[in-house]
Length: 426
Image (cartoon, rainbow, N blue to C red; front, side, top):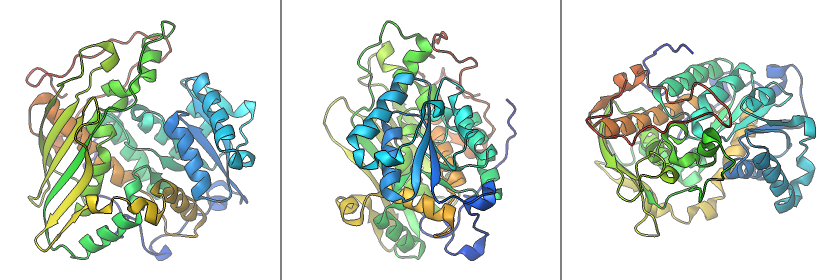
């Protein structure tokens, strides 16, 4: 694969609180019939990645949007596909008539996503582990599909730049791209962003981002039948190539909120991290269990970032704090607001459908969240190397973590746990 470096100095997103245009006059809204040549009473959804996040995203889509139906599914594991198809049908029987995935549209294997995007679907939902996001997103955009895209948008500089190239193409084609960064669809966050961008806290002087909590998705044991690659997929959160480490996979939410408030990405970062409790065993992979970062934006404003996973219910803090010279926003004041304002996981799908049909503002978060993803990758590489990493350097990096061969029994040599001073960013 060849990748050309393109410098991105500002977020390419529109100017409302959610990073979307406020009126249809800013562009031509493309309805489905104009993209694919025919109108449809219902929009057909295809799901790529049939794990817990994928199945719930389908249910969120059904709750948040009308006139959609699930017609295709793709996963590398047949048991995941069939098991979660059955889960949706039995645990959410009220939507059974909207689940129309016949045997011919259940695609299994490492190329399953290609078969799905080539099928007659209007919306592709990308919910696999994030290492695959760039390739899957590129395929969906090349097939002229609208996309719901779970965060983050890649795990390495080469992949995120590949995503960015497809993001620019999606903007040119006026395809709708909604991210799984659901805070962008929570009313309280949107109202606060309007307040911040309207000068309500004055000039921003500092930002703080936190994701401190328990580990996620820890596989308990390796089945003796699983080859190396199958195992690393089953236990994907422990391996940096496929998850990106916590700062990329999970802390993206909080860093994205801060970048959203600033209207741009940071230009450099220094970070520190390591492993305090994760044993050096196969089960725990090669990611860190804590990382702290000091980002700097071009304006000179700093953002402090902290992510930590404790092996138990100890201290927890998942929030953002944005300080200005006339006030501040602390997202901890929004606790409980999700219930009062509705579910943002469902709101993102309402916005998705409204954007596609032209019944609401056009939304394309591809580049905005891609830049936030790259900022997270930049922080990880700063911690791994022990060096200050600039935006220009990460945008020029040739680091590509994805395997060169795919197969259930492909031998995987786990890369060593990064040691600052020894690990090098290429």
